[in-house]
Image 1 (tube, rainbow, N blue to C red):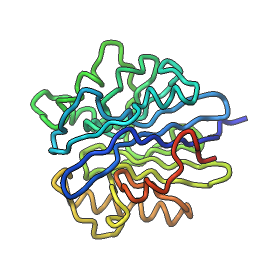
Image 2 (cartoon, rainbow, N blue to C red; image 1 turned 45 degrees about the vertical axis):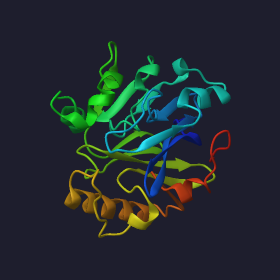
Image 3 (tube, one colour; image 1 turned 90 degrees about the vertical axis):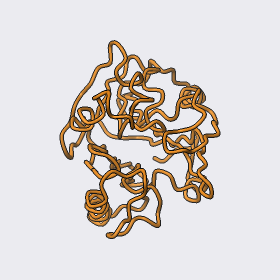
Length: 239
């Protein structure tokens, strides 16, 4: 019998404030019927006082602490999907030594050069000794029911995630390709933290098409505080 996705848990690990905006920092856990634990992003570092974009974080329970509430240890994570290496998404990768790191190949190559300051704060988290990578290129069905979707624009090689659940149906994790619901339009305007506005618009249109084709009932936006206040968060889950 093929692997299938059984649960999706959402973790809010911090809030970040750039007046007048306050936004959540988040990550996700996907669990399969054959016992695989797939973490998507690892949240913000515990020792950070200010992000490169100028936001001031207020930390909640870390991803490791929230996993513990579900009875999971860091070594129980089999796969860590790296949507991109910004500081609020890749701050604790090294805490999961048994995980295979899955990233778009061009994002890794884009982030790796030491002269790229955007990813400097997290570099040690994704270049730690023994890190095991699986590089993907473009849209990939990673396991049955979990599809990685290439969504450049926020940064080169960013990826979003489509998850098909047995009861909730398809759920689309837009991540930072579309950070808030009011940006989920064909003419999505870039913010100062987005690298390429034309690619961002193209990726937004791509996700709009995916949502329509798959009849997605829930699109989770990466940093929409009002939406996150209404979503189920761990220990609750989507099934």
